[in-house]
Image (cartoon, rainbow, N blue to C red; front, top):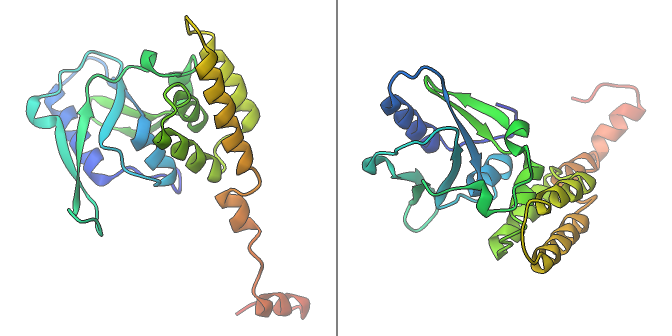
Length: 213
């Protein structure tokens, strides 16, 4: 798993139990993680209340596996109830074409391969609904330097090509999303870290030709 990426232990353990109950399969089931948990994977911005997964096969999740808890230290309840969203479908959101092929494989179980949606595709997928939470997610991804504005615009246009009907409100959403991304350009988490000034004692040691302690 790439440095800085994070899947909650409880989610991995829960999927491992789902995997175990699938039994021995002739070929692995592929699971593509999107939505709030994908945002959390890239940014740790928030923990969603449901797990949005697109499955490569029709999966029957047992009733006792449809809900699980995640520890949330510091919260009033101490835990977070999460629902396995069995109704997730990429046709209901603004997913660009071929987003599955661009996803990242992050974990292999015995019978299941877990992928996480590419961060640009993740941002594009949030344009159609564009709730306040979607706006915050797009901003969080942009602040972590994960969205190239040109790539975002191109994939968003490709996603809109698959829509039928009046696209006026979606294009307004796209314009607003592009403004959010542009507003944090040059002020990403990585850029701010890279531009942090060195301590004076470190600068002095270099100017004197000595190694810092």
